[in-house]
Length: 504
Image 1 (spheres, rainbow, N blue to C red):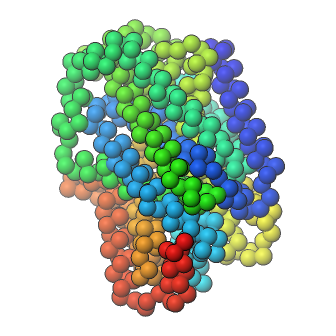
Image 2: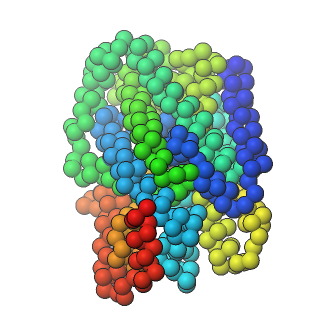
Image 3: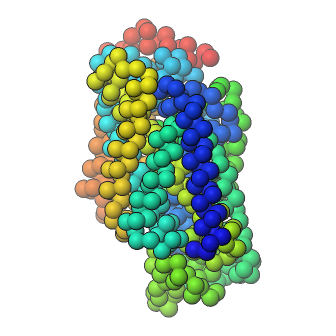
């Protein structure tokens, strides 16, 4: 990495830490630390939700998948765009209102406990355990993505790169909590958007335009330019099913909860979905342009950045397809612009890791420590429990990310399915069906989470080669409805709160 690129990169990192310190000065209680005091405007909420949602997957995982497999991998993007829109359309406003009605809930487990008036705390504890399990894997995916960036940019070993990337993100999350995370996500979301528009435009223009790019890719692999060739119905369903995951992602749902008013939802939805669709297009075009560029231009200089190129049946391919965006950032732009683009990749990674760490720490501080261990804990004490939890969870995620061959996409896939199948149906049922009971919700969460683990780890392949979120989501819904109908009906207090949330 050149001096100018390095300086630009360092300035960005210092800026993020500065935001963390400013937020630290405004964080006095647990609500501030995990929900920002419910004072996010629509722009910050929308870009924060998008940036924390898309992560390094948008700049590393998806372009890499398109580069390796072609347009057939774009079905994931279609499913995600539909799922995100439906989430903003049907869940955002209702959840913002209901969490306030439900005793001003500040976390997803907190909301579920208050929604069902569960005095046993078992629903809160099980929900928190699910969050800690799957967020550890999700955070690990971000650590892998950060390590790949630092490894290719600074010539570090994978292990060195892993620790440096992790330390930067942990620092501002530790300090500033939700406000730091949301403000940095806003900046990072803008940076990611600009990068995803600029990189494919410059790459495609260097190749000779869109038609020349598609012709070049088609000559290398005809299947790359066809969304359905060689793709079975199970693969398409699995890819589209990523959209189901949105209804259960705690780090996205808390953005809805943190909006300053339910009236801000339409504006936030417009900003968030517009950002997302254009970003997805940019990632897809980056992957397709990458295959054409690597096989038509002189890319020998990539070796000095530690990006290896291999020959597969006469076709030049990156040894690690998930580094295609990094490769473009290094070879297409002036060093200062390159530094900004590399910062955009780090932005994507950091914006998700920080959100995941924060939700995980709130699960420990609010849903374990305060609810079970020390009910009389002071606000200051809870904030520090949350900060210590950030460091502890991050350490476990770093250890899980220790394998240099780890795939960002596969780790994200597992965690995304876990949350979508465990919480998605329960969030929807809790918001729109007054008949769901505490036992129905509890059974559904357990069945959804267990199905994902069993399906992914023991049944994957053959006739079971279906993305685990699909069976998990279906079984969760069925079990939740059956158990609710078979048991005692919800109390008058629960029904009354449901009706009040529906009226607002």
